[in-house]
Image (cartoon, rainbow, N blue to C red; front, side):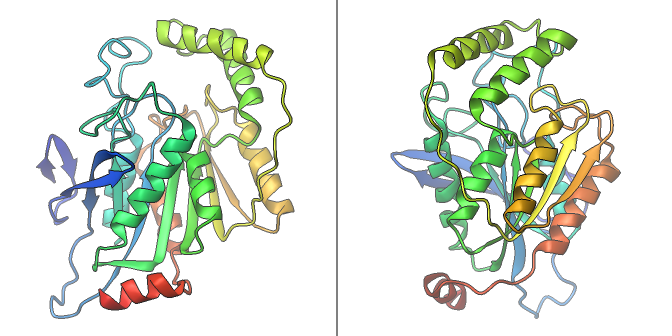
Length: 309
């Protein structure tokens, strides 16, 4: 094992490269983790890769709650950061499987500029698109074998990005919501009130109270989102108190109706962050994604970038 920036990585994996990229008027920071180099150094191989996107609330590039920039939000108790975060665990597993990954601190978190509370979902979708664009200048990455892993809110962002980007060939959605934000907020608050998970934290109590106010005051017709995609796998903890496990079943049904054939993996006893999932389960998720990163025809502009290398 190697240690870089306080994070532990598998033996033989190159040091992660620290990368900054522009997202609107801000500079966001992240890191590119490449797999173990091929044994034949003279053979140049472009590597399949995935963008990793975190869940709700301020989180760092590893997917853990960002207690560094938001010390009064998190700390001890039920909302203490779980380390290593889910995205770091997945990045390590993907590297062992021969897949590169890029993950970054959302705006206002970790080493990225900006203010998280003043950002919104649409700005975070744009940031994910900018992250994809930044990685497409990397000659060692195979642009025809691009995937996205989205966790919680990151799953919503991954869907929004992939639907409009023909180069994204594989998605893994973890703890993804299927219904409207209105219904998800209400069901999540009701679940936490019933079972007590995370309910004692003042940030969660305030979020649930504010969410109920938002639901009661909002009455609008929501547009439907076309869901025809390429290759999708769904992962959901059976003890998820943020996105009810029923969401995965509904998402699977919606994708099947649209013509997709998504696989659904239920992680027994695991909560939203899959902290209870053993390393073997995380590796199985990585193996599944790696097996679905098959080459896709690229749009002309990306094909030109790929050939320039």
